[in-house]
Image (cartoon, rainbow, N blue to C red; front, top):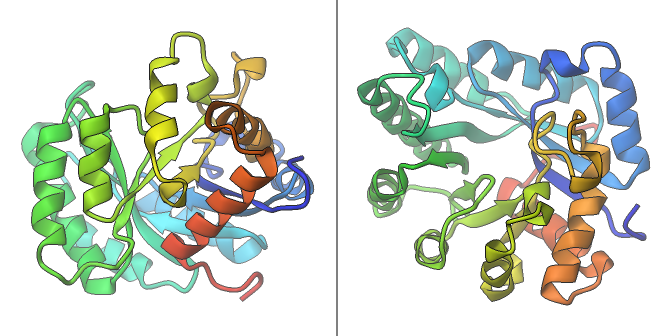
Length: 268
């Protein structure tokens, strides 16, 4: 546990089958470890509905709803209408996980672009921040986000670049648009030292922590399922990189998450 300051996990997928046998225990361990807020992020309509159900059941959980680029093939107006209904639920704090993935290309690029554009419009309409997935599509994602941000109808915090691993120029473009940058346990993996200089250069008031559970466990638990209770390890890694204390990292990133997502009061 990272001292007395609460932690916020800005990105997890607790509805996934990896947690079917012990989901309640996983959430209890997170709370016991000092994680007071978990953003449970959908990747399609079914998982977005499940994320909302879990947020309604568990104190400390909130939901994000969205269609991941991998799931964007064949998405049509009826899907967007249903997503809009979900996005209006009380425990929903963001539209996500949305964006583009030109690395795996599991959905046609045209479908990815259409779904991304539609969901940006929805976020602007509801004044919700967005959670961005981007792999090998930086120029196109940034182009679309700049156009979105320039409309003036977007929420003040705008959103977060999830699992950021880009360069300083890309980071600067996100920051200039008002975005936050989120980092997971991968910043402590061998061979990721190139990210340390970048992290040190970033304003701490724009940093978030995430687990991306069940993926990307801390180095000490490689090969295992990740879960929100491990977030303190990432806070300690970020503290080592930046020279701050783990308590300061926990406090600052939790405040940042609250400022971006504006979660309802616990149990509300």
